[in-house]
Length: 198
Image 1 (cartoon, rainbow, N blue to C red):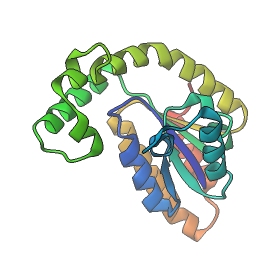
Image 2 (cartoon, rainbow, N blue to C red):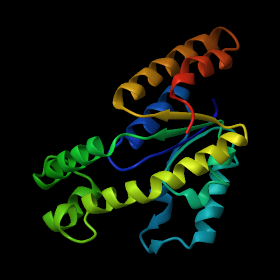
Image 3 (spheres, helix red, strand yellow):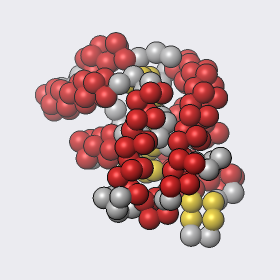
């Protein structure tokens, strides 16, 4: 498990899981948002693809981001593709909770400093409305693209709840311990079989 791609809607814990994997496996971590959004504005698609491809051309990496336009240079090069596919109700709850924390000044981040009540909840392109709209429109397309990625031999891990995430993290920890003793890739695949597939 040397090349891992993660994606999923907002508030599913992509960054938390990606950083955890990076620490556990000692692989470099890249958030594609950080790559795309520069101080001078978003990168052109061609340059974005080039830089992402440079990262995934290496031997070990953990890459997170919801950019299906990069599937061929990220997802298709992974050993494991992790889809955080939580129910919409849970995503809405988490977005509301996180936004309220940020608006109350209880979280310091670039996003929190830019957030207003309008951009969080009430504008046409608010975080909440955008998350709901994208969930409904993107999920069927993601399912098709994940299936195509699986056909290329990439291991798919579809985590449908926070409980699934915790269970898979325990599987990764067990795989890491067993790998230190000898080959264990097949045992990790067996342990995660219940979470795989579109």
